[in-house]
Image 1 (cartoon, helix red, strand yellow):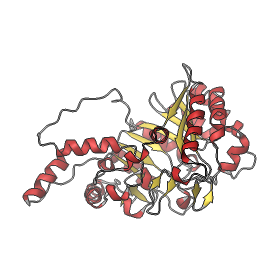
Image 2 (image 1 turned 60 degrees about the horizontal axis):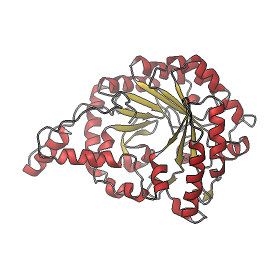
Image 3 (image 1 turned 180 degrees about the horizontal axis):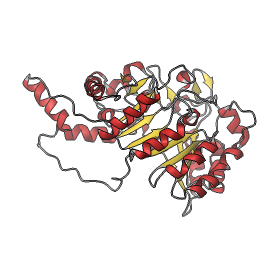
Image 4 (image 1 turned 180 degrees about the vertical axis):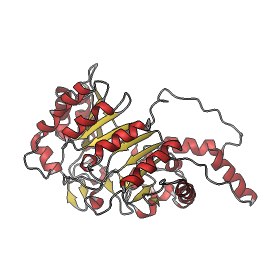
Length: 383
């Protein structure tokens, strides 16, 4: 904030601005691999799966170490592929924990044996989430199309009690992307699953998950961004929303002292009918400096723009050494100026809409120092 303020003053006065601060993002989405053993019809990263792009392991370790020294506090192993398919999955999890980073893993659950192996390395505040999206095995297989023809939803869920037994402090979630009739990817219709929300919630509770996370399906806009597009529903939109609202209410009735139902911001605004309000973005997305995505293809400014050329900050070696990290700071500064979020994200129901406008206000505030008090979630660095 101080850097952006001083940069603004320098530009108004016609003088050279200050160099970017020597910082890394607070939270990093890390794609260990592009490999995946599913062929999910609703996968938002379909175009980059199973490509030849790979990390250099030594370079990645050096990058994580350098980022931790510069302020990185959390890593989410998610997206771009299935993290457990990386041959060094367990080693990277333990390496990151040795750096005192908070760790989250989002997995398709097909390698429960590997998730069990890393369970003891995770500490309170870390979490594991399995992307399952169905309540029945039939729908699960239709949506995810696992390469293994013998893999079942029961088999995946059966690992959870074992994982919890090994580490009772670890929170394990059941991820459920809600798909309505008419949603599509590249013109291909997706499997609807609204009617299995309650069935999945019952399953999650029965197998010992700590929570189920409900969120609406996202699609790729022509510019590459991930967007929520309920207008494409084949039913009248109000009827779709009413159906979702009813099923979510029934799911919430299954909460207990040990099990909760998490409703995403996107789903809350969809139910309320005001999702369009979160598509009005400031020109500058300040969250680009605080949360980034490191993939085998490079470093990107946001999970909603993973793999999109004009959202690429720099290469995968962004923090591989001190000089590269310094240059990455300047490349991020250039992208903060070049990437017009009010246009690039005009269809994105941004989870960080509110905080971006708050940061915008704080940076533009004429006072020298604005007091910022820590919130209740000050020990949660996942953003």
